Amino acid sequence: MREALLQIKSDLGEEAIILKTRKLPKKVFSLGSHDEVEVTAAIDETAAAQPALSPITMKSTGVYERPRPAGTVIDPGRAGPLALPRAGEKEDGRRTNDQRRGDDRRDRLELLELKEDIRNLRAMVKGILESGGTAAAGGFTGGWAVLYKRLVDSEVKPAVADELLKRVGSTDIMLSDSQAEKQFTAEIASTFPVSGPLKLKKDGPMVVAFIGPTGSGKTTTLAKLAAHCRIVKKKRVSILTADTYRIAAIEQIRMFTDIIKVGLQVVFTPEEARSAIAECASDDIVLVDTAGRSQRNTEHMNDLQELLTALHADEVHLVLSATTKDSDLVDCIERYRGAGINRLLFTKLDETGRIGNIFNTVHRCDLPVSYFTNGQSVPDDIEVAQASRFIQRLLEGCAL
Ligand SMILES: Nc1nc2c(ncn2[C@@H]2O[C@H](COP(=O)(O)OP(=O)(O)OP(=O)(O)O)[C@@H](O)[C@H]2O)c(=O)[nH]1
Ligand SMILES: [Mg+2]
Image (cartoon, rainbow, N blue to C red; front, side, top):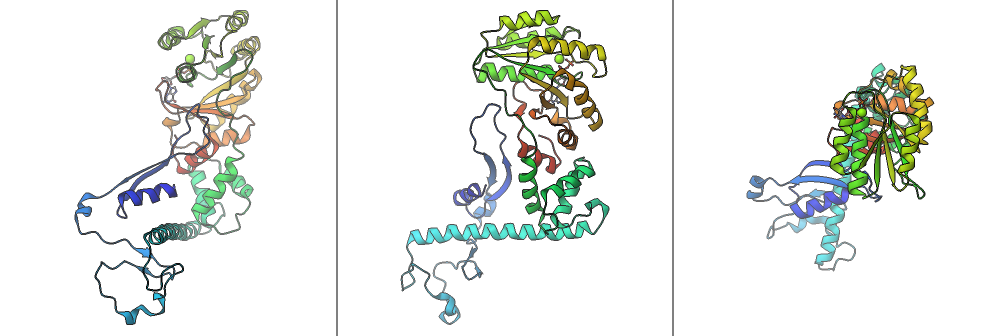
């Protein structure tokens, strides 16, 4: 980010205005490990038309001074001892272009650091004022109090927020809110479980099933992933659907498989599922859609369990909507556990601004999150779950 800001300053000048900065999400199948940032900057052309002010520079003495226009006469009597030549500078005070450029870059970095320090100080004072020993701050002070409040505002349970901040371990040290946020994100992200993207097997097809309550987004998510595997990764993909319960479910998925030219098999019984899988032996991946039924319907849960046993699914993703309340998320997970789920997949993050319910749920179960989806568009609105990006969103109080 710092490099990008420096580059903008050097391309657009000191008057450049930063409009927006953001971290780009990782691509669904991206193998690269570098973070990408996007910075939107502009220059005010009306201001550019005015005679430009020369940039403020910071001298090593700590004195801020706007460079004088060429030809300004400087009173030698006022230059004092600070006018001594710098290291590497010629005795007569003349400096090479390289030296000047190097100093310029260092000065800008120092200025950026100084601005960050001021921002931190401001946040620290704000934190102290906001904490004021009230219950809203959870008994924390400074940056920790601000962080606690942001977590609770995002609907992380107060007891969970309290436990997390104590786990970070240095809540007795007064930090600014950006320092506290940095420390918290780094530490908590390392404990937030994510599975990474779908993996392929060397021997035989990877069988991936999507199960979950009604309308949570199973078919749409399967379609997004099938399109990525087929079109982007050019893999051999097959789709099985066991959703023979809902009217028009087969038409819904057939329309999609026709578009991306992927084979579809409809299975009514576990035996049919077993032989359908055998027919997909030459595929790279088999994605299995299932009927959405209430997790409280015992008969359905038994059928589902039999189906998954027959499929020998490698990955079973429990698809849950981010708009579901905490207690129902937990109830779903507990009831679907028996079916052998080994991933959680959260959909509809675009429909909520507070994702503390996801955090509370993941925090108390030992299952990793595979993907987040954030819209109805196939195949775009999906991303691989990344812990630090999720924590950042949680603290910002907005979803993806
Ligand atoms: N806003 C939003 N809508 C979504 C998302 N994912 C799915 N949907 C919508 O949710 C609705 C239900 O999606 P489906 O994929 O049919 O859900 P399902 O789990 O297969 O439903 P059943 O098979 O009936 O249980 C559709 O209108 C989708 O377009 C998402 O990430 N964001
Ligand atoms: Mg469906």
